[in-house]
Amino acid sequence: MRRKLRNPLSKLNVKQQLVLMFIVLTIPLFVLNAYGNDRAGQILKRHVTNAYIELSKQNFRLINRDIEAVNKVTSTVFQNQLLQQLNPVSSDKTVLERVKNYEKLEDILTTYSQETDDREPIYYSLYVYDPNNTYFFAPFYPGPRVSGVYFFSDEEKPEWFEEAVAKKGKGYLRIVEHLSQPTEGQSRQKTLAYIRAINSIYKNGTIGVLVVTNLDARVGESLETVSLPEGELFFTDWNNRILSSTTGEWGSVLELPEEAKTEDMTSTVKDIITKDYIYVMNVNHVLQQKLVYKVPLHALLQQQNEIKRLIQLISIVYFVASLVFLLYFWRSLMTPIQRLVYFVRRYEPGNVVPETPRRGRTDEVSVLISTIYEMARRLNSLVHYKYTMDLKQKESQLQLLYQQINPHLLYNTLESIYWKSKLEGNTASAEMIKELSKLMKISLSRGRELITLEEEMEHATAYIKLQQHRHDYQFRVSIDIPEEYRQVLIPKITLQPLIENSMIHGVRHMGEDGMIGITVRGDQEDIFVTIEDNGYRPIDLEKISRLLEEETPDPSLGYGIRNIHQRIRLHFGEGYGLGYAIRSGGGLLATLHIPRTLPEEE
Image (tube, rainbow, N blue to C red; front, side, top):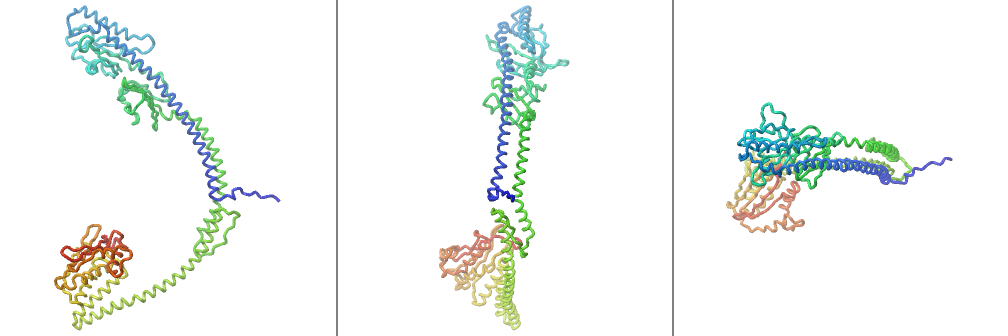
């Protein structure tokens, strides 16, 4: 006989099976993510940190070396004896001597302008202010690719001359649009120049300004030695103005991300990775210059295809393995649960419950199935029990309706007696019967617990009139209820007990001197109903407070005002209720604090 294979997971409960499935599904995911992230991080670090930063350092070092070389040459020219003796204002020398000096200075600057290698040449020019036109024989046709000595008057003074003099001998890079005042027919003069004022060693003052032109070609030549995958190189000043670039753009301002602020840099190199680009910045704090590499991020990601293919292969294998495990757990757990859901959806309380399905397992799913079937059977029993109790409840309601006939019958009988007394001329008796019938009517209130303040005041007024007729009281009653508060809801039979207390314990024996006042005040949220009297008896507020607040008050103190206080809190919450205070001028002041609730809001 063939032996039947037993499911090894049948001994595990659902929790253990789910934990096992979680481990099987998540461990490969963690391993895959760790491997992919590690490889991607290594590639990004290798390409960005090792390549771009080091390349940027070398490239920036080359550019700075060229600028430092220019600076050294300008220092040499600065110390030249012939240049230091140049004084255009003085006319001590003859014209021939001035011509010879001019030719010597021209030769010196031409010598420095010649390059011994194949690199782009740079040109040294000296601009001297000559207000008296002492060097009238010297031509004034400066150009970015020409070296020479130029003497100019006020009309020919370049726009950048005063700026250079203000630097007091400090050299700086500047994009020069015109080497002289722009004139009609002037050739293109825009160039990146190194400008430095030449000060006199022997006396105060500026001799002239030394300008090194065509530096844009020299810097551009250095930038072109670097090849980036779809990247761009920019050489800028401290304000991000482009001095030279591989794109041919210069003179405009380079847009950099917010993180690329130079003020926040503590080192000379900084790399920033944004959504679209990788920025590598190399700065020179002394010369106030920057070299910026801008590389599209997609160009870097193209080099990670090898890692992506490997991750895709692992993902496919992982997906197939997960699918196999998922199908197995689906058959083991979900099939019985689906059958149970089918039964629950079709089951209606009261229907016959079929026999509980039997499974050869004792896990939570089997327990759940048997429990739900048993609950369905118990629910059927409860349905039959509820049906029986509903019948008994309807019988009780019918008996209650019979009992309610008596108060209504009494109210109708009082109305009949009132009209009969009225017809027979017994006016006083008729009025008392009328007020009593009002008390009966409002007390019923059609079964409502909350009535309007106007209805409650009608009930209280009927009680006052009934007591005045009964005991011939001569006290005065003042009522001040603004029209806007008459529709506010209040628990029924709330004012009558308070008015009764004021009558019995306050103004009962005062005759016409007795006074009871009912006042309503409030705002958009709260209503305060005040019942005050001018009684003369001493009042113990501490006993009243104990009666209102203690859980087990003294029964000898009574329950009327405590009942009112508790009912208000049951309806509206702990923030509302009844409070007492001594009235100024004698007597007691009772205040009802209730919310401003209208019938439609209830």
